[in-house]
Each structure stands twice: as C-alpha cells, then as structure tokens.
Image (cartoon, rainbow, N blue to C red; front, side, top):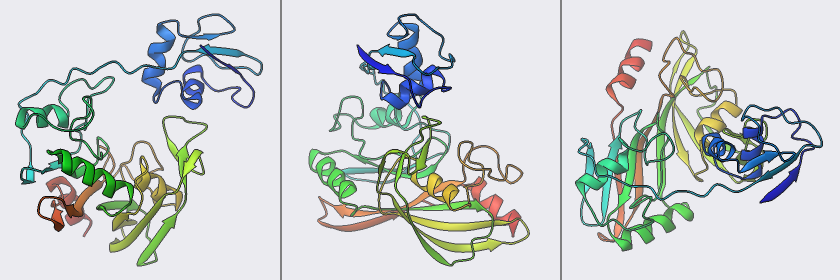
Length: 299
C-alpha cells in the first residue's frame, strides 16, 4: 500500500486525487479500487466524491489491469488498404478503439480480430500501434506482422509517421498557417483531462493550415499535422489558442449549435514507410458524410 498526505490536493474529490497520484489512469478504474476497499482516507473507506482536506492520509494500492478477453465480433470494417503487413481502417466516430472499463465489446479491435488473427504486440492490444479518440473518425493502422509492428512503432516514436487531421474549430483563425509548440501533461485539477503545462508535461507540437473560413458561422475549417502524439493533443492545443474543436464535449466551449455529438475531428491521412514494400506510402480517408454536410450548410 502507498501513502500520501494531502496538501495542495485539498478540496479535490478522492477519485480525482487518486488519478493524479497515479493509482490508476482513469476515475472509473479508481472507483473500482475504492469499492474494493483498496483506497482509504485516514484508515476508513470513503465514497469517490469525498472532498479531501489538508492533512488527510490516503493509503491506496495501484490498479492492476485485469486480462481482457478479446472476443472477435462480426462488425463491418471500412478497410482502406490491406496486405500481409498492415491493415488500414477508416474508423467511424463513436467507435472505441480497444476494450477497457465500460467498453468490453463492440470496439475496433473486436472487429479486427474477427477479420484477421495472430496479430503481433501485447495480448490486450494486438496489432495496435496508435489510437484515435472514440468520437474522432478516420484512419488507424493495424500491424499484421511482427516487422510491421516494430517498424510502425519506431516511426511513431521518432515522428517519421505523419498523421494529418481535418477539424472544424470555433472562431476565425487569422493566420493561414501556424505552429503550436506547447508541452502537454495531465490536468492537475481535472485528472481525466490533459492541459498545456500540466503534470509530468511532455513536448507537444502541432502544425495547422487554414482550409476555409466561415465568417457568418464564426468557424474555421483547418488541417493539422502532428509532430508528436500526446493524448488529446490536437483538442488540447486548439483549445489552448482559443479555437476549440466544435462539438468537443471535454475541451473548450465549442459551438453546439453547429454540432453536438462529439468533436468534429477526422484523421484523413497517414504517411509512413512500409517495411514490406520498402518505400514511403500515403493513404487517405474522405470526410464522413455528416462532416461534409455540415461544411456545405456553412457555405
């Protein structure tokens, strides 16, 4: 069991504080620790919403991930490209990439395992080298061979894999092109979120280009390219510069009158070195029809 005496965390909820301590990566996982009596305040069990006070002593165990039973499911996939090494899928918004607490089935990986077996990588994340958020649509690469898994993972790490996105954001961006160079870490106040200069911050760089401005709607359609790949990076960076992604339920005050079902963010292009073809390749996925319709209405 670990111990922590509350100082600056006073007035935080118990579950929020435990996430910030690193007991688990999400409040859902922390709540399971609390329910199991593995997180105590001054030696007593408390509810997740308990507000901490200065001097409180927290004793807790770190969350241990239970092995996931990845069940293949017959879910249609929009396959952009496939060979013996890689599988590129155009993921719809609303689909979770891999199983986790609260999402044990119906995920992209459940569908992938029905389509193909014996994928490399961790048993809980077979073939997975990168992710996109649930409500973000677009391209995601699955490694089918060991050489592809190693190669794509390395390219992701050294930033030679290029991931490009389209986004509709709040407000008018005056610059035609820009670079957002602002480190990102976990938000110390809201541990389920990330923030510029947050806890344990890491380098984060996003480039953007204005594709079209919509003055009457006070919105801008942009393309973005990630140099780094921090969690929620584009969403955090655009909110940081005062132009949150429209529809984003977590960051900023995106215009819900335009769209209210999740962030209007689409991973439209992936460029990487293909270890089997031994050359750089680039694949694209068109904007989803609902995204296209929104842009047409704004015009």
